[in-house]
Length: 225
Length: 254
Image 1 (cartoon, one colour):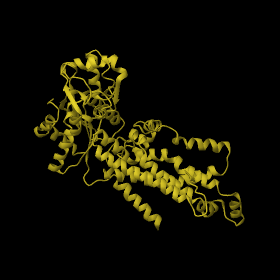
Image 2: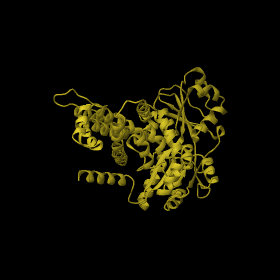
Image 3: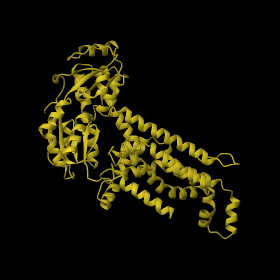
Image 4: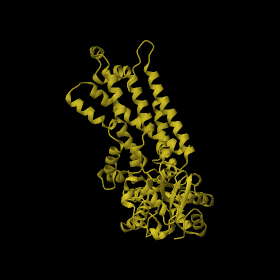
């Protein structure tokens, strides 16, 4: 068991959740407000990572983080180290490929809130933002929880983008999924097997948890997957 | 309050993911060095307390990563030309040193009915009569042992014929993994890979004479911006006890 890789995977997943969920709430809220064509287009763009092959995302990330790119130059100017092949680099990749998981469940949960409740909030004198934080988000808690769990679990499982963009550097970019690949190449099957079983259990646990949390006593289970 | 604790925990995890007690020397090492370098690095740590972090992969892939700013201190390539190209672009501290010479073998997994000879006569026959359906090599475009495998196949006149039967590994370690899996009937793998128990148990091999390919000259160089501790490791790798370790695990003196 590569504990350094384990710790790195957990860090990456927690950081991704911490950064993406607030953004997912804002985006989900914005897109839930109407079904206009503009919103549909926006949703299609932000949901792209769900469908795009990881190598496509990896390619664009490599190009945009390359030594001569403007992003890399700004980053080096600010932080004195390169962005490519660093934890920050794979975190950036993670934020992009996890985005759909962070906003779609929240958007759906917010869409399910009846208009009457929002109208009632208005007549009670709540502003738009007060209504969002005091009424809508608490009602959409299942969607938010789904988003958190799915983003976390999906980060643990990501491989293709991290392989292309990360460089397999221990302690920086060798996450658990990369470590398994590395062990197999080094013909250390036992170690690879142990880490694989671990990830299977985590994945199973995550899905089960999501399902259970979606079930409330008198209601049909509604998991925003 | 809970939020603050959560953020603090996040911060600790974030930071601890990167910081280490002593700053390790980061080595980008050719895949054929797994056994040799792992052992040398352990000895070095016992001797000096200096941690060495090794990432194995194909030399061509490391060349590309280093050109893009990859954070390595030392490149141990299986192909001189990558080091020379990096030196030309002023990305290394000097032209480096040859640290070993590699050899390549034809590996036949158990069960495959091909007899081994240094001129690869039966291998050629087996390709033509269908006993060999798939051959594993490293990718010739960016992996040195793949390029050498291509030279050999061209020299014995089967390169065109074998195209549709090649299984390409990203690096020679992956090619080795394919070769011992039993899913291919032959593989061109490093001689150093045959010192690995899993490989020894899975089949037989013949070392290919150097008359069939250009020499595998393995060169290393310290990279621009490397950690100060790298020079000590570099010197250690050239000393007799390290050189002996290389020669005990399938390399020859350069």
